[in-house]
Amino acid sequence: MHYFTLQEVVKRSGLSEHTLRYYERIGLLDEVQRDDSSGHRRYTEEDLRIIEALACLRATGMSIDDMRRYRELHKDGLDGAREQVELFEAHRQKLELELAKKQEHLRYLEYKVAFWKAVLAGDSAKVSEIGMVTAGMVKQLVK
Image (cartoon, helix red, strand yellow):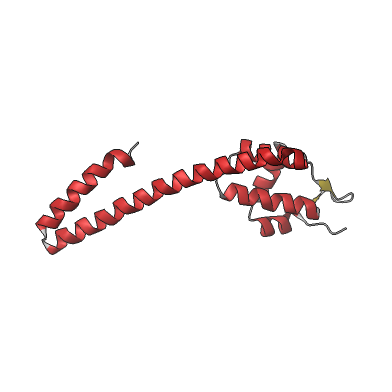
């Protein structure tokens, strides 16, 4: 069986040593095997697969609690599949809402760029028009 060192797992997963130890400490990862002579962590292919999945979930902004739930359901196999779908659909919906909000932020910034370009160009009509539009956007952006 091939084992991976902590440094190899850090490099492959993008997670820090601290994060990997933390995930193990809070039970998000099962206890990792240790080398008999050195006591260093030795990760299996399965450990690495789980860690890479957790790294991806973390990158999506998934909470530790939801990642824990994912791990519990994963261990349930087919019995947990329906709840896995619900977990990931809920997270996807959350990301879609965040993305829509970020798109509104970008739109606001585009207007601000256009506003200041109009100021520089001395186009007072455009300045007034854009000012009214951005004033209307404020209520949506600051909720």
